[in-house]
Length: 251
Image (cartoon, rainbow, N blue to C red; front, side, top):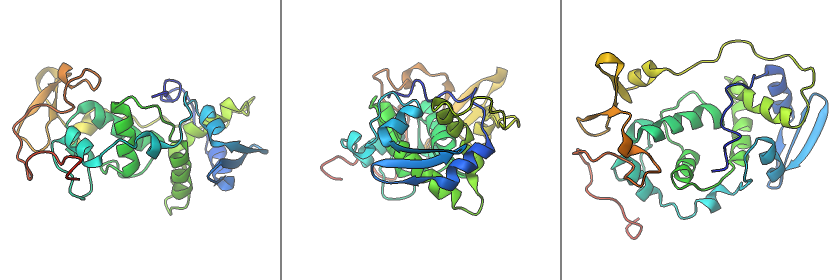
C-alpha cells in the first residue's frame, strides 16, 4: 500500500505543544494544506504533505483508487453477512488481521473514543489493504483533525506522534525536547477478550470468536492470512439473517 515508512510510530514521541500549534492554524483546500508550527509557515500541496508523512505513493484520491469496491460484496466477504444499511461494527469482521487493522485505523489514522464502529473511510482503507491498492489518506486525516479539534473533549492528544513525524521530515525539531513522556497505552490480549473479539484458553492460547456462529478458532490460523489466496473468513455454520451475498447486479 506504500505505507512501509508510515505505519511504525512506536519510537516517535508526541508533543502537545507541537500539536496545539499545528491545529490552531490548520486550514485545508482541495489542493493544499496550510499550517504554522514553531513560527514556520507551510502551504503544501497534498502530495508534498503525503510525502512528509512518509506515505510512499501520494495517491490521495481514495474514492477513485477504490472505485471498484462494492460495499455490500466486500462486507459479505469479511463478515459473511449482507449489509442492509445498519451500522457496521468491528465485532462483525471474521478475520483477525482485519479486526486488528481496523483497531489500528481507529487509533492511529482517525483517533476517536469508539473503536467499535466501522466508518465509511475505514471500509475504503480495509478494501485497499486487502487488494494491495496504494493510497494516501492524508486529506481524510486532516479533515478528521479539524473535526476532532472542534469537539468538546479536544482529542488533540491522540495524534501527537503523527504531528511530530511530519515536523521531523520538515527539519523543524533541532534541539526540540518538549515531548510527552507519559507511557503509551498498549492494547494487550485482555482488551480483545473483554471486547468479545477473542477468548482465552488453556496454556495462554487465544481463540477467535467467529461472529454469528457458536464456533471459535485457535490463533494463529494459517488459512486466514489475507494475502494467501484463501477466503477472508473461516468456513463456519452461520446463523444468517439473509442467505447469500448481495451481488453487484442486485446491489
